[in-house]
Image (cartoon, helix red, strand yellow):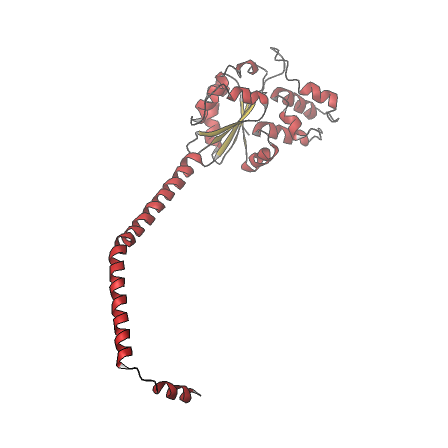
Length: 258
């Protein structure tokens, strides 16, 4: 079979005219290619440069996000207002969210995005909307979730948060922060919800979110003292009514972290 095909092709002979036509065709194609190369060489030369520039811009964008926008730490400020701050690697505020209507009123009164976390917390404390809640029995609680929680807590415990407002500073792990976010709660109040759940208080996360820290601490103290019954609807309404803010009332916890 192979021999038959070879013999058939050997019988085909190109004429001089066919050879000339093929030669002219190849010459024309080579000239076109040369002209196209001259026109396209500049564009081809730019392609690597454009790619490099695009890569540099991408790297710059990623670097900017990594250092300035990437969430690294979460810090919640809870009294009755509940506010949560998101911090970047430089401990600066990249986002601030209210977790209840009182928190929204406080945030509307201050500008803290881009501020160092200590300055941001102090601005929240000095806010006219926050001041009425900062009585001696208010149980101001600042909770930090971060891989560098000790560093952040050390700064807080040397700041007016504890030295002037007698706040309680504590830490939480990032898993707790994620669970709190899933429930739409602040870190501080979610931790209180977890503690009360150990005593079968019957409180749902959203119910705890609407109770001030001083009332949550009061309720926890009752369970730690031996209380067994769950919270009923009448008591829940009373708890969500807020603290009396009377001087000399509920004992205030000293500043510490766990």
